[in-house]
Image 1 (cartoon, one colour):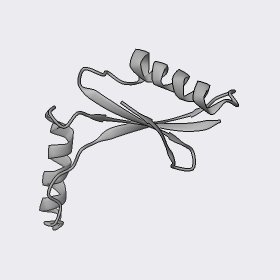
Image 2 (cartoon, rainbow, N blue to C red):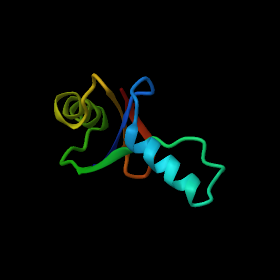
Image 3 (cartoon, helix red, strand yellow):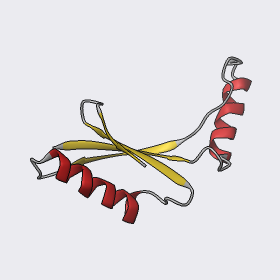
Length: 87
């Protein structure tokens, strides 16, 4: 199973990189940009056929290493983009 984990800062956490990108886009003439939030995408290839077990293992990976759940949230997707799980 191939999965994608999308990790972003929680809405309540200030995103200084996103703010810098938003300002830079505005200075380049993209005035329609009202805000930017940056994050990271992690793609994993799992040797697991059972979807429920894969979801469980992926959530555990996120909770233990891939996301800092104090300030970040994560979304787990199958490689085709269908949602699998959210934090």
